[in-house]
Image 1: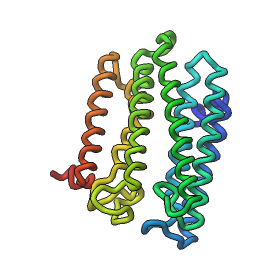
Image 2: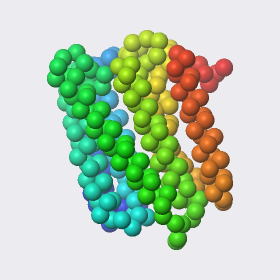
Image 3: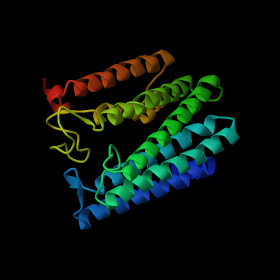
Length: 258
């Protein structure tokens, strides 16, 4: 892990330091869950910011590591700073609204809340489209000095990440992530996915973490690119199954037990 951090810091200092800031901030938010009583939709208000800081921190370190393979360093640097600016904006709103005991996403209760929610949507759209462009650059490079299985893992990992990042707009259009009931009911520990109804966050989570899982498979386990493509296709179908399950109003564990 020490070698990974040292190498990442050397390869992309922008995303290394921002990722570190996010991970430290997640610890602060977790501490705040133990010393504050403010709640939003039935859970401590700082749980959501903690999860967002963790997710952004992991993303920064992941994509920062991959982009060392790209030769267009100026575009990598511009994208890296764009990630910092956009995600700082998102995290400030998520944390600020939590501090006020208010929702950040799906909140249209006042003119200001509607504006903040809309601006978050615009920011995430720009971020996701830009990430898709980074994925496009990976499809253009040739596997010289890098295992083709690893490269295909990165390519398909980014592709699925982008697809299921856009699933967030499905939640935004509904102004909730729970299907068949309002947000805020009983949920699984830590992730808080609904245990009584469908929850669109399940597919969103597993789809976006293909960004880590597929490259790891390509690097450590796959022996042929066809294996990476097959696993990516199966993974995509599994996550789509989770999405359809949620849209049918069925909670995750109920689907697994049937």
